[in-house]
Image (cartoon, rainbow, N blue to C red; front, side, top):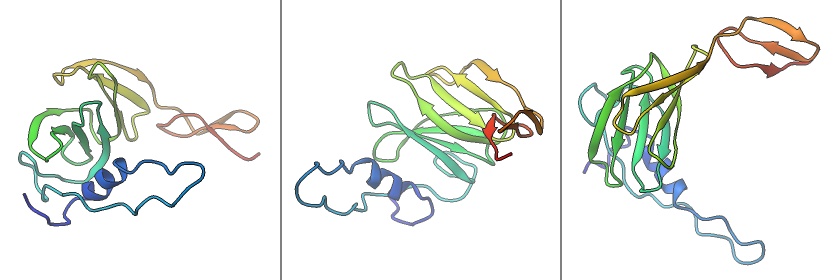
Length: 150
């Protein structure tokens, strides 16, 4: 297993294993480096602009790749378990208790759902427009509604 800092997964994995400090008591220990994996590329276990990360209830790690337009699924040691194509420029990612994978492609203004085996299930949402729909609210291009100062 490579310990090259080629992917920022190490920090995210370390942070995911730190428990919050109790209300009263000593400070928790600082996050500790656990491991890293991957290198730049398009092959299995390689990354091209990894941008989103999610960890399921069984400690499997899901990573969206902005330029490879895919999700890769790894075990806790960094071994590739699966990979599947997703909508162009994926960003945020989440996994539910049934193993469904939710991906928010950047600039498309929608959320896509993929089954545990990576097949496309459904999508919702649509790009907005950059106009004020009511005082204090704007709909940016290709994005969700956001609060604005008027």
